[in-house]
Length: 460
Image (tube, rainbow, N blue to C red):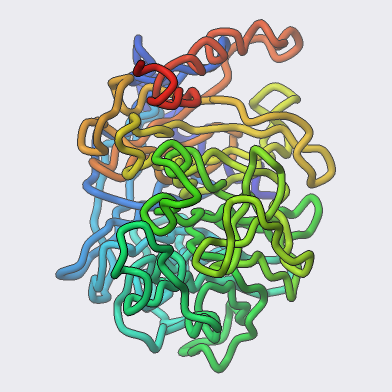
């Protein structure tokens, strides 16, 4: 029924317009993609933003990152079928309360979006770009504004909503201990008081209004900072990507070098079941050793293994690449190898000095029955506009949001300017093979993707 509606709307657009050809950019809007893919720029920039959603009729909704005023959402419509958004409208009758305002998702005819402290929803009307239904409050965070305060959400098939309540420190540091000696190890609060309610994913009723934490159940714990979270309908399971902790060298210079600081620990791709504990802040995951280790703040030395009670990720992602959105591809447009695989928007690192910053790409991991079946691939690159990224400000764009159109195209948004790309496959799906990936494999040699060489090894 949804597909019929989409085809009907598309037919009307084609019938009522003289300009119906998609307008691709000669340079794919600055992006590098596997052979056979093309990109067009839907909009050059709606403003600093976070996640995006695409409705069945092609309308796009964007969450702005604002800490003042109202109307913190943007709606866009392609009115003539050329792939470009001609109609852009702001909406959102709620107060903008912080720059970690993140989520924008469509579920069962509602558009859900979040400020830092509140999750809202409105009923969508396909006849109208901007919803004119009342703004409903679904959940309010009882705590003040804090670091890592993104309220990202996922929906299962039984009416539940999963919400991230990330920890607000790096490793639950005790700021009164370990700073008297430059070679001392900074200590962590033990037990970590944040874990009572934060560093967790909570489960709520998606249709109940005016909820607080007491209305939900803590679904999993030990997750430092989750921005990208989604429900995989193929395997009926919750998945998320977690930002790993920072400052191993700064907190324990006896055991870690500046190079260790740049390449460890893993950002984690997690398959989450109720009751799972992923070990933050007491542990971190080392993707080179494929093991969970004790954090230095809690007696670790870079070798000591963590307790088996803590769950490992299903995939160790590169350190500090900052995975900020996660999408399992379910469309028919892309070649078969992409079906049910995971696209990840890597926002890019900020703190790998003296080594170059890394990430700033959209990656892809093939899946089979809910488990990774291959390595991380670079699907889309070129967002930064430069190879050697000394500081985050040097990058032109930072990948942030992902959404899938009903036709199977992939939408990618940037956080710095709010630029939006739409990626389509225009080649022959039947002959897609590893040769189509060769141009992207060559890009893995660039400094913002490859593993940096230790400075001590090249400076003699």
